[in-house]
Image 1 (cartoon, rainbow, N blue to C red):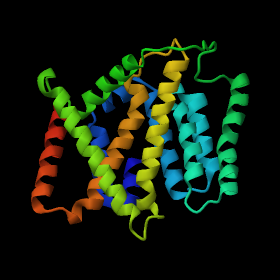
Image 2 (cartoon, rainbow, N blue to C red):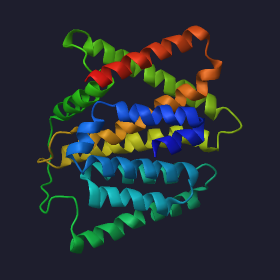
Image 3 (spheres, one colour):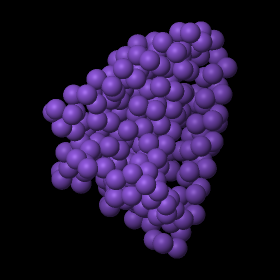
Image 4 (cartoon, rainbow, N blue to C red):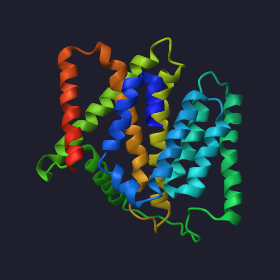
Length: 272
């Protein structure tokens, strides 16, 4: 899935690099060896992004994938419904009336899946307790540890925080510059122009879904690698795609710096 997405937007070599990077994530093998929750959610998330990018007006299709993940696979996928609705609204060239229709079509599968879940069961607990959870910082701290283990594997506590902060700033800057470059080109309404916005909308939707469920359901467990691996996959796709699209414009010293960082992270991920 990662190979297909990145290959379409940035070329075959970039697609291969992105796929290898996902395999090298320290959490990949433990997650796939011990859990059946994380991989299906990651696969459906990437498939949904593919539909959003290649068929942005087919809102019932990515709405169906979002509903399937949110109702039947993992409550952590609830934010995919938010992402589907947001993407239906953001479709390029759609008028207001068309947008409302697309939002309705994106939500229709959720209603059908919820009705089916009453008879067939779902991934949600049989009894839900609604209330104000609070302690959002506790959930964010748990998520931060998971991301830190993947972004800065094997680093000690002394430099860990600085490395994660620096990497985060670099990745944000990389994404912003790439988005501006692709969005300003005549090919903006193409797969390369739509991929980064789709990745951002999906990541924000998943984040909002996790935060809302954490705050609204007091018995929600802390976020784990199972819940967050889809966002790690999105991060890898966005990073490799951005580097590949900007690579021809970079000076030689910039390319060397990127290669050093990538090789350093890869060997640390293998050692972890």
